[in-house]
Length: 114
Image 1 (cartoon, helix red, strand yellow):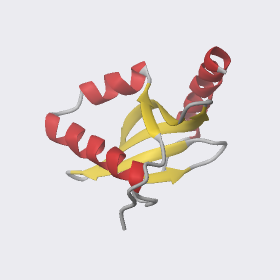
Image 2 (cartoon, rainbow, N blue to C red):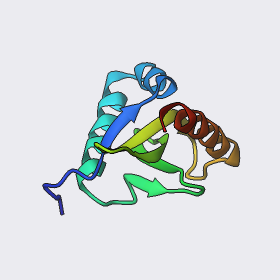
Image 3 (cartoon, rainbow, N blue to C red):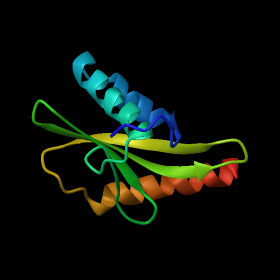
Image 4 (cartoon, rainbow, N blue to C red):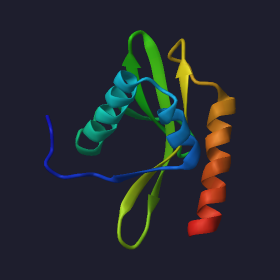
C-alpha cells in the first residue's frame, strides 16, 4: 500500500549519475520509477538494507539485476538517501567489494558534509 508521506529525498553522486546515463532509456526509466516508489512504499524488493549501513535500490528489468548502492544521511533540514554507485548483476548476490566501495564513498561524503 502506498503512503502519501515521503520517507526521504534521493541524491545521486557523480558515479551513480554516470551509471544511469550509460543505460538504455527503458532500463533507466524503470530504475527511476522504482526509486520513486521506494520513497513512499516500504518494500524490500525495491529498497533493501545490506550491511554496515549500506542499502540498495533493486530493479530487475529484462532479466538484468540493477543495483544502486546507497546510505542514509540526515541533516537539520532533510532525510536523504545518498546513492553512491550502480552496477548490473547476473545474480542476486552482491560482492563485499561493492559494499566496501560504497562504505568508502560514504566515509568521504560524511567528512565533507557533516
